[in-house]
Amino acid sequence: MRSSPSVSVASVRLRLAITGVVQGVGFRPAVARAAIEHGVHGFVYNDAGSVQCELEGTAAAVDAVVTTIRRRPPPMG
Image 1 (tube, one colour):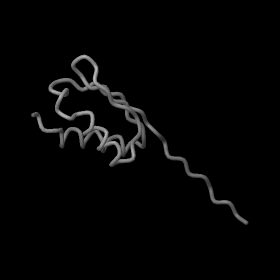
Image 2 (cartoon, helix red, strand yellow):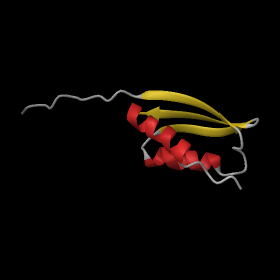
Image 3 (spheres, helix red, strand yellow):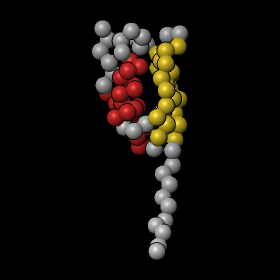
Image 4 (cartoon, helix red, strand yellow):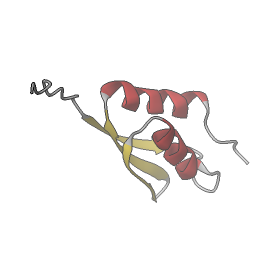
């Protein structure tokens, strides 16, 4: 029996500090939804006037989350 070659996909980790109107507008859940949508792992939390994010996944998936955050931010109230 032949074994198939193992293929590994490089993982990247990106930390973001997002400032501006980010508290009380659903920003954390929006980031979490984008991460789930693109299969990215990590965490997101509020911190003194900013949202801190750490995203981990393939470079393409992490880039897609960042693009989603920029193009579809939550409504500002």
